[in-house]
Length: 348
Figure (cartoon, one colour):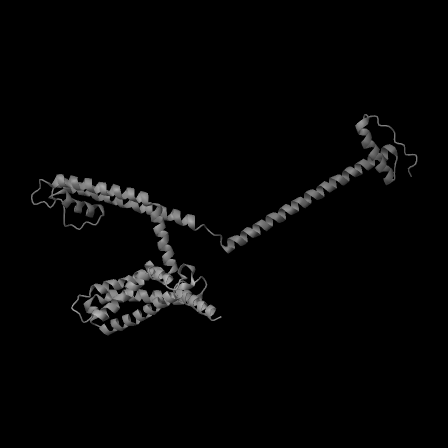
């Protein structure tokens, strides 16, 4: 009983702070609060790099980071403690090691370790400014959110599905840069004080121009070089459209294959109403056809009765039925024009 309660507590903790199932309101609230705290931490880490802003309230930055690191540390410890409820990490030691070595768990450590390193090495002569950069790993933790992680996974799958086309596009881009840089080097080689001193030096101009950045640190001096640079800039726009189109097509195709359109409740209700109406109309048509067939049959029987009454002067129902039966039998053995007269001497 105690073990089951312990496992149940682990499951509740894990689902609350790490992977809340759909509809688990408390887990969704906790996850939302953690995501908000991560976003605010990233903003504070960016503002802290500006000395004028940091000097306005250094204590605010310190205590905010202190509280945030405590929360992140408790979250990390609870995650490692409760992960053994799942089959993938069910081993007490090995399972937790596997959980610690997960990519997102490593990101969690990188997000909080700068604070502890700063506490340990704060009095040393080491330059610890790089630790501030490590705190930006907290931004990656945003991908722990289910919707963000699913969107990122979809994007990666779309890229993988078009990796051959993207590779071909990259090869074409490199080839164009190499050719354009070589031509520019030839054009500008005779110009005085040119910066296009070699093909490797011209490659920087080719990359900057093809990506439409245009730093302006290397520009052609000759008229022919400027005209050719304009053409290369246009080719850069065309080359950028190629991978964008490939990625867009792959993303749309992947989302269409993995997220088929689901009918809304309103559409389902309308389809049910239309189906019911069609079934009702079909049933009414069948009933009308059956009634019409019965009506035709009754009229046919009445006509037969009238003919027999007129021809054989029979008025009783039994006599009419016997005469009709004999007449039908004789249809197969005798000519219709001359049937034998029925023997009805004993009829009423």
